[in-house]
Image (cartoon, rainbow over all chains, first blue to last red; front, side, top):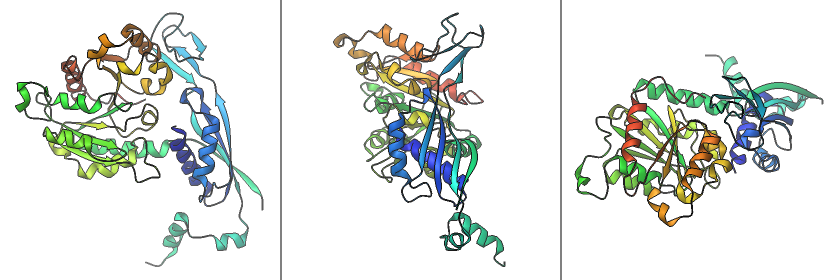
Amino acid sequence: MHELSLAGAIINTAVKHADGRPVKLVSLRVGRLRQVIPDTLEFYFEFVARGTPCEGARLELEVIEAQLRCRPCAYAWSIEIPAFRCPQCGGSEVEIAAGNEFEVESIEVEELTASALRDRPEGDLGREEAECIAPR
Amino acid sequence: MHRTKVRVVEEALDANNTIAAANRADFDRHGVTVVNFMSAPGAGKTTLLEQLAGPTSSALRDRPGGDLGGIRFGVLEGDVQGSLDADRLAHLHIPVVQINTDSGFGGECHLDANMVRSAISALPLDDIDVLIVENVGNLVCPAEFRIGEDARVMVTSVTEGEDKPLKYPLMFRACELVLVNKIDLLPHLDLDLDKLLYHIDQVHPDVERIVCSARTGEGIDAWREWLRRVAGRAPALATG
């Protein structure tokens, strides 16, 4: 159920980097420990993207397996079930080497033609630019 | 028309974390320690807060609310709708501010940094030492969103079953204290308390735990003591 909120966060990040250009593809790295259900995330992504530069964009997910490492004994292992104690020494000082990612890796945007740029509705960025050149 | 690939490599929740850091700075400036208080709906969060103000069932009722023995606390209540919980606390003279999350579609199922930010001006930060933010009842989303807190506490009640840590590891890991509530009901349940505690330890090794009952008051002194300890500790616990 957190996929709805996460979809919003992904779209905000993508839009920020798209610089007003339409987004066609968002590549995301998701660690197994984030408990994200890919199908659900894609469903909400499509829904929340409507009316934003991400509308119609494809969401590509790379799932990262969970890798743990025990600090004191250096034992490293991967987990399928949420058991975070070191199976070798029983210690609790275990760090997550991988599996906690939730990052937008890259986006693919469509470069606008000169005429499309002229017709572009004034977004936040457009206003900022306008303010910069306005006489004071 | 052609496509360009833009390298981003940015944690998608960075925007929230940035606002959370701004909240933290505001709270720090006022010397207020902030605790993010989370659980499933109905685990007993509000009753555990009522109990901090003093036993609700005894003659100690006249004890002033919002006092942890020299440490003054206030509450920020997050709910999808209504102010039922805030009303209960205000009744005990605990300073309380309500946020409703239903401005989005369907109502947000958690508090995020921005929602807490919008409430800061309404909070009596100069009159309190500890702010407890009672999050929306939910075992999933609140674990993802930092709000500018110093420490996170989650409540699991024994009626929820032994397996919840295994089903919601994100939440059981996103906290520095687990309150195991409603233990007065153990005689009526098939729950194996040791198994629940074992599962908590598997998911979050060595996390602090307090077994308690908001109804009988068992363990409440330890919960109050934990808050006093966190209030006196700097810098913050919850940095990860």
